[in-house]
Length: 342
Ligand code: DAH
Image 1 (cartoon, rainbow, N blue to C red):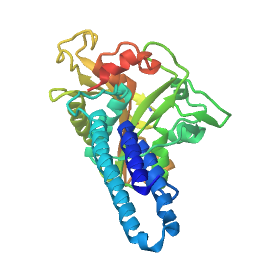
Image 2: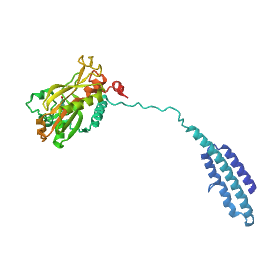
Image 3: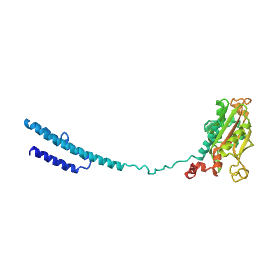
Image 4: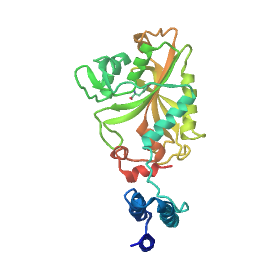
């Protein structure tokens, strides 16, 4: 076969093969078959060695023309295939930014956490610092240093879980008062939130619950300072029109001791179910720090005085949200909890 015929045959072959090509990947394979190092056109070029010298320039021209023609064919098809493929990819990967997203179900803060955060922010606004004491306490911090020695009848006010003769699960965050006073000179203004434990279990008591303790010690602190602070606190937590009143009470670590009521924020003081017809709701215990407690911590009670207060967080949450059974706060039932989503 003479060379012209051979070239015609190759051209035909290429055109037929290109017809079949559907992707740039198979096009590349085909390209290797003709234009690759071991491809058919390269094979023809190699044969130039056997061509008589006088025919070589002409033959070179012919073969170069073939090579160029083939390259162009492949390049053109490659361009249009690439364009098609890109178009297809764009269509497939198109994102409709107007489609509404999937909303993930969000959680809600536990009512205890909501109240705790609210209390912390009110007291932080008055300049209180946070102190968190240990949940496993020794007898000294939980009782003795709080003017409640072993034979003191007030120990029976709280049913205690003992771990050893000396170690116990703290029954009150008041234990933190001692830890703070032992380590810091007045002026002291701390807030101590945390869980406490008592062997007690009914609709309004749980063996584990949360308290928030406050302690202020400085020169010249009086019961009036306590009352003023409580008024401010009650307004912020229960509403602008709420008043407070102090009733005499007893705690071993305060003298005098008081129980603090707020006027009923539900009925405004007229009497309703929430306040059991009295117009008042008890919210916390407080008092002037007993001088024996100050002395025991190395604070001179003739120079410094202070007040302390302690409240149950669950109790405040139940009052504020109208929850009638404390168990709801510990069961973790999502149907209950999600009602507190803002
Ligand atoms: N610790 C007391 C209790 O758990 C509450 C309490 C009363 C705390 C009077 C105080 C306080 O700081 O002054 O019942």
